[in-house]
Image (cartoon, rainbow, N blue to C red; front, side, top):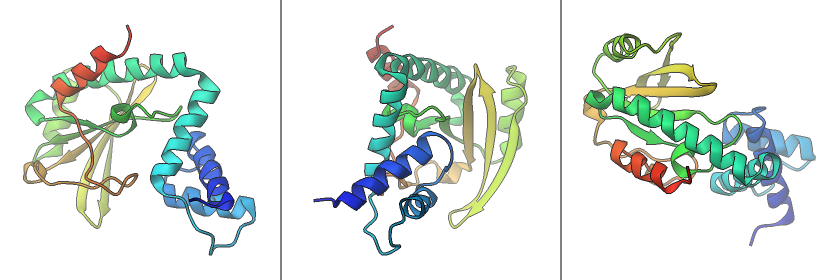
Length: 195
């Protein structure tokens, strides 16, 4: 059973994430500890608990209908981009897949190409504009993020080499194998939302 302080930390960290003050769960937990004046030895909530709180706060602020409207639009955009990128075996991940979006959620996709520049050219040929290219290096390796805005929603495509296609990645939220959906699965999800 979670302690009261753990629940307070979860809610405060969720608030920081929901409003874009923090973008990483660990930083949100640390900031929550500071703002609540709690000891660094306090038991910290799981990322999943914080994620659930983010969803609750977003629904309280926007209302269920607005959350569902945004989710429909974001999934529509995901389908459009995934259709364009079909040769690159795209997958939807994250909050737009789970349905637990927040106001600052992006449409998060994975795609596969040995030369990220080829995928960028492909997107630009289809009329996508002002794509920011960001190279990220971490313990997993070096990856390219392609970022732009589509109908006021942020889109991010992480480009992995084809050798990563069948690598099982783990979610920073659940610490379990990352859920991902191909184009057909996203189309089915979209049909399940009211028009």
